[in-house]
Amino acid sequence: MTDNRNSEAAWTYHEATKHSYLSIRANPHFLDWANQPLPFKIYPTLERLRLPGEVRPSGIAALSAIAKSIPAETVAVPDLGPVAQLLYLSAGITRQRKYPGGEIYFRAAACTGALYEVELYLVCGDLANLEAGLYHFAPAEFGLRRLRVADYRAVLVEATADEPAIAHAPVVIACTCIYWRNAWKYQARTYRHFGWDNGTVLANLLAVATALRLPAKVVCGFQDAEVNRLLDVDPQREVVFSLVALGHVSALPLQPPSEISSLGPETVPPSRREVDYPLMREIHAASSLHTTDEVHRWRGGTPLTRFPPPTGQVAHLQRLSNAEMPHDPIEQVILRRGSTRKFARAPISLAQLSTMLDRATRGVPADFLDPPGTQLNDLYLIVHAVEGLDPGVYVFHRERRLLEGLRRGNFRSEAGHLGLDQELAADAAVDIFFLAELRPILQRFGNRGYRAVQLEAGILGGKLYLAAYAQHLGATGLTFYDDEVTRFFSPHAEGKSAIFLVAIGKSAKQKLQET
Image 1 (cartoon, rainbow, N blue to C red):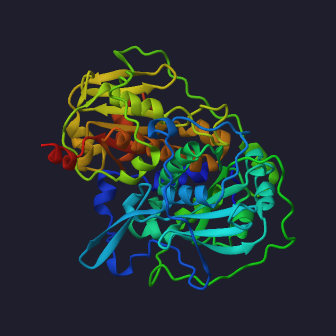
Image 2: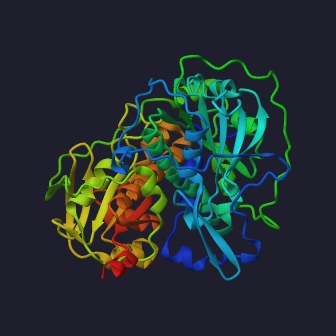
Image 3: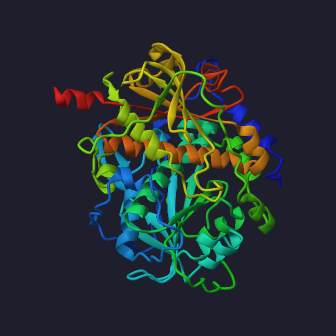
């Protein structure tokens, strides 16, 4: 059993999965389309409970929903309708596209390669129109399949060492990730994608919870084996990555049945064969928590990053005027969100960029971010076409709400190269890179801090997606050449690691429609 505190495991994984110009070109991997895994987990023998399909208007603007959260002790118990809305707008199928030889089902949240390795499970007490139990969300059928009958929330309370948000939540959503579904394309780097893809789902989920007046908190401190056992997943193939407490009641859950038996329900094989990449499972095992004491030590004490006062040119964030401020509700924005495939090289305004940065970084309710508002990732920008802002390289001072210029110039070519030589990064109006100082994070949280920093980047990236689409802009997440990103933003970013990248701008499709 690897100790979470021995953070060398995280460093080993991080270094081994870095992209470089040479590593990409020397990799013989190819996509075996005949063996592509199914995008859904299917329990063929379990009865389906159909979910209500109506999306209720929330009346809450997306830009408000992503920036706020409901106070933790606000009494709120969702019935089946809000539960269905939460599931649909975070992991449901929002549209589909046919192509020769198949069909792609697009989900509410962005995902690397549109492979959708994140599965959602529901653990709840008795709700209006839904009995207490453990359920799996089936997006293809938009329904729930019940795995266990009875209230098992107390298992999660024990596994999280009496985490208050879990203890008082009428509903808990457990997010799992399936290795092979993403590794089919991305190999061992998949474990980074677990954080990104789970994070974009959570960005939607948190925003919709706010719109529905439900307190919500992301919980990553739990005894892994206990939660995996409750969900009856095979940890060699599928693992719990995060929990989300939803709602609040004063009463604590009753004790569950004394024994958590193995279910062994039949599932449809994901593909003919699976290829194993041991590094993924090794970092997950090394970042697992096994005891109540380990879970207690996980909470609080988030390392703080304090930038020195800016020495270069600064640009303060600007507010959109009342006439410019979009009020599209969160559900409408999620349903029209996509991942931009080509940018128009057209400018956006400084007020639009400011709104995205401001609304996406007002804090994430999570057990690894304490005090509230703390952030693990720092945001660095390559600005190409932002009216009111010189092209160049910037760093975002979150607490001061300003951008500090690091150097001026046209860096479209360099941005395209850093984004794995993709035109998207070169054509965008702005590229936002997430970098983090891993050493203090791993020193404080152990290997599990690696999960946290990737998950937070995914959540913040997901919020940027929503803030962009709320303003009728486009966005897409990209991968990158790790060490070259750090070198590009140095000396300011010296010692930091590249975590994620989001490119933002006006989509070429939208520009074509306007003309």
